[in-house]
Image (cartoon, rainbow, N blue to C red):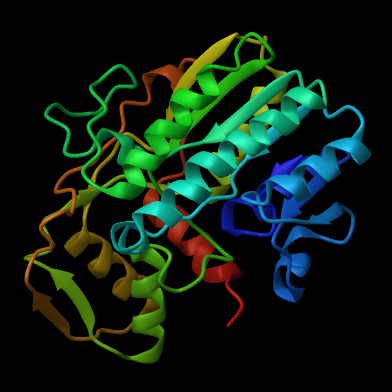
Length: 298
């Protein structure tokens, strides 16, 4: 089962699982576009993860599920700050509902998609999985609380926590991440907005890499619990990202500088030694952006 299988990362994951011959159930608040993204070969279940009665009714009909990939979430930092209770309801209470579903359906493994936001403003770089988790916003806090919930279920099934850094790629909605925002603005010939001087750094990871590592979890020796950063181990400034995208698009647009966000993380880069030891090799940023631009449907 893939919750959020009609979303950006989820739809790529569903496609990869189907390609490898797995029977896939997609649980999502489905609309026509999400059904299209999830793929017709998947078994589609329309449900809100916060609706406990609906989730309980699914449990009664499902039987056994071998693995659950839990991606359904509220992912907007701004929404989380403006609506902390709703943010918690979706990201924490909703996760508990899916954990209960996995337990009732005798799952062997549960893969939770967390976020690099759990680290907050890290003090040392690159950021290791064992570094302090001190989120600076409600979104990061809700993901950290959901991680703690997942680890309480390790007597029922194996738990793998994935902390993706800045994921980009085809099918991403403009506004979901700075990469999609910049691509949209450059395509329209509109100015790019920098909050501050553009020196903030991020670790941009191609969606196909996140998916390939996630699928590999099914094939690895089961572990009672594990936490993995998924990034490239390379940091890129927002200014460098803008320059690279304008070069690849063959056009330039103006840049507007606005005041820095007080709760914006200034620097972010993953230590990926754990996943590299498992054979993981990330796609270089320029190559991933070329694939993204070549596969985007406008």
